Figure 1 (cartoon, rainbow, N blue to C red):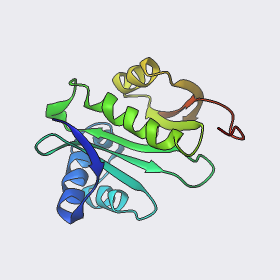
Figure 2 (cartoon, helix red, strand yellow):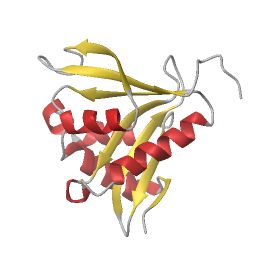
Figure 3 (cartoon, rainbow, N blue to C red):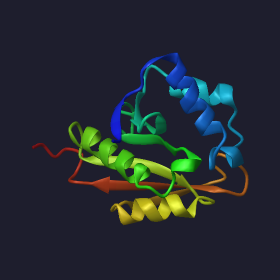
Length: 154
């Protein structure tokens, strides 16, 4: 049974970093294992793993800065894609973020149309395009899902 829980320990961090640097879109972006590990271990981020008798994916959240509630990374193991794990990770991230703020933000690469289709299916709207942001010739699309304005209070 799939459980989403906080990242636990160096071995899990290394597994997530390996998963990130060995799959798209990070291969195209050129992210190394060391860079991936630094991102996974960033103490200012929240990292949660999808555990299905082993780590099948993970999500990294940024709950600080201009875009509070930013999903920085969603990664599903290549062998586990298409089974709903990405959707479960996004839904988990939304629940966590919506507990604190009414907006969820994420970016998706122009060369990752399957991910963009998933986010659109889950109710995300295109906010803007960042041309040549990570690599030349590619864009990052900023997307948002909201349950109300920023100054909204429950």
